[in-house]
Image 1 (cartoon, one colour):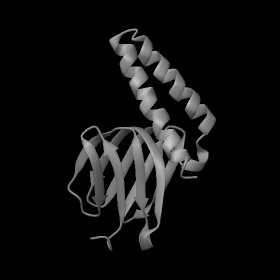
Image 2 (cartoon, one colour):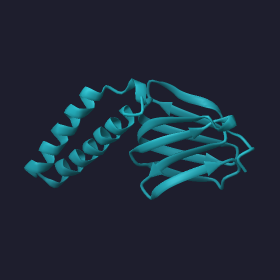
Image 3 (cartoon, helix red, strand yellow):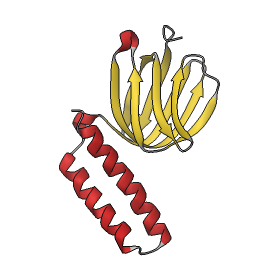
Amino acid sequence: MADKLFKLEIIAPEKIFYSGDVEMVEYNTTEGEVGVYANHIPMTQIIAPGELIITEPEGVKKDAALHSGFVEVLGDKVTILTEAVEWPEDIDEKRAEEARIRAERRIATESGEADILRAEMALKRALLRLNMAKKK
């Protein structure tokens, strides 16, 4: 299976983050971790914050922090529409640490269910950024 390629496009609001032929793409969804090869069954999914792993021809892997959005999988193409995605070298580690601290403080104050849910998502994004920043 890995010898077959498919088109991967990752589109963020400000730019096309990635476009190319790949062997595999791995990401997190609200239902769990997913790995897609060429000729995968068609599906759509909701992205959960997590590591995005792109396997290019010859096994070259690229990692990125993928925060939220949607995925459309077709047999020969995968399209990821995301609100935010970052290469490890583009992550500001100091800013991510500050975001982690703010989110933990908001969770500790328990100011309402909606605020707690937003704070938990902010914490997940901050922790993902910090983890990915270590891969620079």
